[in-house]
Amino acid sequence: MTNQRKGRDFIARHGETVFNLARRMQGDHPHTPLTRAGFAQADAMGAALREILGPRPKLTLWSSSAGRALQTLAVIAEHLELDWHQARRDDRLVEIGMGEWSGRYYADLMAEVPGFLDLEHGLYTRPPPGGEWYDGIAARVSSWLADTDDDPGDRLVIMHGMSSRVLRGVMTGLPVQPRFAAPVAPDLPQGSIVRIEHGVETVVHIGTGRGAAPA
Image 1 (cartoon, rainbow, N blue to C red):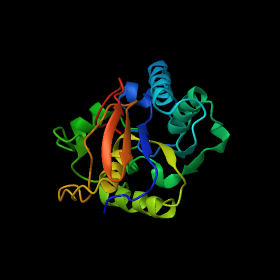
Image 2: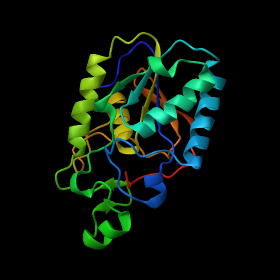
Image 3: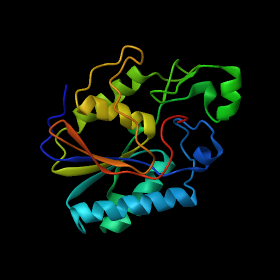
Image 4: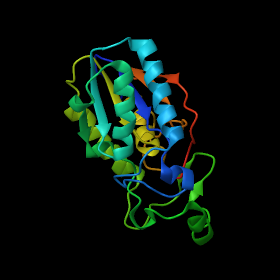
């Protein structure tokens, strides 16, 4: 079902992290700090949102509870002259759980588990051992949407590559992709922002970071 909130949702993907740079799986790992490029991407997102919304906009701030999302939000909030400490955080917005693959180097997994990544879609082809699948992400982000549907006005949501794709798919009413058991929106590079209003998505800023997996 498409999202029917009265306000607009700006959904952003966090900036590059040290794990992204090293091509390690981070998933729902809570603390993987931004690189200098990641901070630059957050700066660019903040500048883009200030251009769209102006200073001190009436905006509800939401973030994944992961450190990299909160770091990204801190930079953006400074651009918007908003109080980062007023941001709400929710574990349901975190990245896909990587289970036994968490922290592993991408190249090592490619050698051990050939074909685990669908390169066309930038998605995994199987659940990580002890990890999460896309239908699990869809369930938790749908729960978050239901619980926050009464948020007033516009809001900014800082998330991750894969979890944000599923949230966007749910909010825009995309069909479930049988292979992945969830609606999944197209991939966007790190540091990108979309606006969703009445179930319609518009890309408002394209980041300069990596796209697709590894998460």
